[in-house]
Image (cartoon, rainbow, N blue to C red):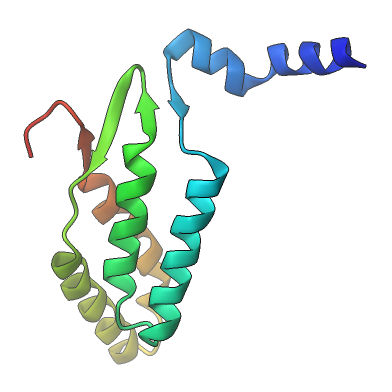
Amino acid sequence: MKEKIKIALDQSTIEANRKKYNSYFDESVKAYLIIQLKFMLICICSLGLAYPWALCMKYRAKYHHTVVCGKRLKFIGCPKDLAQHWILWWLLSIVTLGIFALVIHVRMEKWTVANVIFEEIEA
């Protein structure tokens, strides 16, 4: 049984890519759960008004523990900037009767990726 598990782990793309590209996520389950709990509590207690701040906190933790090709990532997004975009996007959704809401996920991904850099780069 242990041999089957070891063979399955050796064939896993997670382990293969970790060895090949030195890419991995090194946050513990406990720390990840704490961040998720904080995120939910902030959003619930603020009735969603602090969502941009909570999301930036979550992304900061996520990307701080992400290594791609041996280089650690860093999230440099500003909650104030996200809040401005977030308000604009939802106003456009209201004006377009929900049609713009189809685009929000893509806009959010663009904003997120634009605010992720390698840690060694000066922000």
